[in-house]
Length: 135
Image: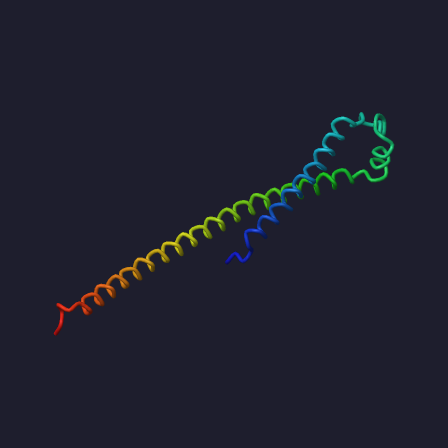
């Protein structure tokens, strides 16, 4: 599969994947911290929690799990995307660098060839123009 994205596009994707990871990981961390710090004892829903957290637990008991799973999936997906764009960008930069090196080497060889031709033409013109070589 040929890669048609430029290095700048890949870097832009990497930027967004990186921030996606940071945000989703922060949500997951916040949720985990809230669970560790504010976990009520069994049978005592809402004790020691903020009113909003207690209300959410009573009205939407499965919401916390949904948020945690969604955040975890977003974190993993964005981290994988971040790593893959880093790898793709580095590979593309190496390929482009190698291509530039080959073009430079080709240009140097062409210059050497042209210099030899010029030297040969100069030698022929010097040889033909001298009075000693009359035929």
